[in-house]
Amino acid sequence: MTVTIVGSQLGDEGKGGAVDLYGEPADVVVRYQGGDNAGHTVVFDDEEYKLSLLPSGVVRGKVGVIGNGCVVNPETLFDELDALRERGLEPTVRIAERAHVIFPYHQILDGIEEDDKDDPIGTTGRGIGPTYEDKAARCGIRVGDLLDPDALRDRLTYVVPKKRTTVEEFYETKTDDAFDVDHLFETYRAYGDRLAEEGMTVDCGSYLGERIEDGDEVMLEGAQGTIIDVDHGTYPYVTSSNPTAGAACTGSGLGPGVIGAGEIIGVVKAYTTRVGNGGMPTEIAGVEGQTPGYEGGANTSEEDEKLATYIRDEGGEYGTVTGRPRRVGWLDMPMLRHAARVSSFTGIVVGHIDVLSGLDEVRVGHSYQLDGREMETVPPTTSGWERCSVNFRQFDGWPDVDWSVVARDGYEAIPENARTYLEYIQAELDTSIYAVGVGPAREDTVIVEDPYK
Ligand code: IMP
Figure: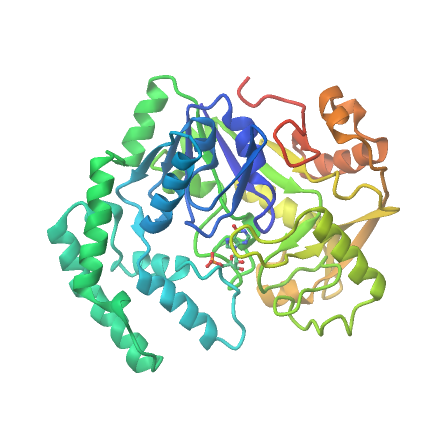
């Protein structure tokens, strides 16, 4: 069977922990979209591993597959593999031949395009958007092409001059080796050689289909989150792929019948965070350079500033990839209802409830108010989203307790007010809570239901 893990909010929900938890019975862990813009932190044997491209299951000895829906920076791939090997692990990784390759010109264009915008997206600068642009424009270069020198040279010869002209003539910026066909050919052919030597490339859909036929359990690990999905998020403040469950099919080569017959688990952080620009109706204070209209605290109360800083620091809300402070807000139920519908969640994992402990009151954005109308889900346009005000509900806070004891003793040991909060979320989403995260390590999890049973 398959278990698909999807971020319900804006990325950084703690999917690494959920994947690590549910990856245990899995034999194969697959990423189906995104690239090295993701930041997964996995704590295993008291060691912390930060991965941005490899599926986090590789840390636990699973076969890690990078699906055809991903964009792959070979430099990051081999850096992460080498770093794990240096720490004594022996990761097994397979890469879809249909996945697209991120080249240095994509990364440079990502930066130039951001600098050129009056209202930048706040991308991770990893070249993700420009690589997906080339994929859709049918001038991308795929992992399989790296193993075929003639195809690689042909494709580079076609695309690189166009990129160089764009940068030099349209953006009036000097170019370097990143736009030189011979240099790129030599560097990327060498990556292709290494992929071939290590036998890493596969026809992803067939490979996974065979593994499932042989009885393997497969987990599909979404990166980023529903609200930065290119179709279902706050466009244009989104990533360029689909983190939602439909992409687990297109990005892996497994059909909807296979993915839909399995479990689809939404990961929910007990509050909301966002990195980069775009609407966030339940935001508590703001972050300079990311929150639209934020004036360094001049238009926010001191109390809200303190609260946002408290949650940010308690939750370690700083980007894994970029180190940027994350914007912090209360839980946003319209976002979650939207996410649950788009991905057909069969269950949810709610994490970080320990971070909110000790507060007198915990708030939830229950619904939005837009043009005199109450909305239980999100509006389709971003301008509409930005105009929404929030109807909040208040919950009594819960005490800080020894969360490792709670994790050991189970659901009933969670403080009563926190359970009231969790049960509200469960009821509103009409789904089941499968687990509750009460700390960063895998052991800090209250397991309620096993999706594999
Ligand atoms: P890109 O994916 O680098 O193009 O960035 C587009 C938007 O998605 C920006 O707002 C990023 O901050 C956001 N983003 C990309 N990856 C992640 C992630 O793993 N967690 C949270 N936000 C992300």
